[in-house]
Length: 178
Image (cartoon, rainbow, N blue to C red; front, top):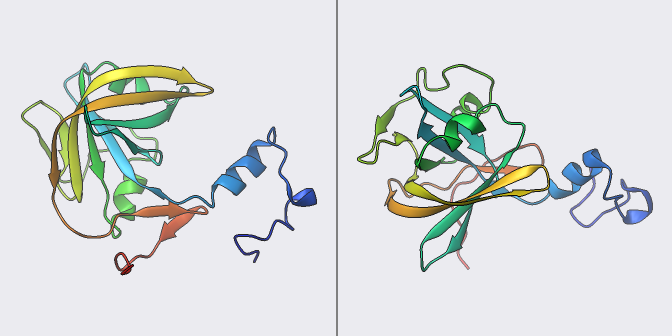
């Protein structure tokens, strides 16, 4: 298995940027936390999807962002809502990640969740929950960048987050001392 600095599996040590498979494999070396973005759809039913591209953007004002494929079938339902929730998953919650990644009419079946004061569905087992109002949406390449203003947040558990790396989940006991 190649090490993080071994580029021998990529021709000439450099990847062709136009090769999507190589691009994914190379960037798969960048760990990401796993979040589930949720909202109440036009039908009044909760909708949600797993994202691996969630980040903090600004402290003042408090802004966060995530990216969603423009071909997503869930995105139109999330887009219709004025507010959305972000539930950061803990290290032992890979099944929740999978539940919100699969194609399903109702990804909330069998999931413990509650509706916030803003009407946003939030996952009860998440280690962090945020309620956001939509601030800005931009089409960037083949994804939408969705920026939300954080209206409320809660640290629900101090467990380590669920981390996705190289096509799988990282088993973490917690942060190491620096």
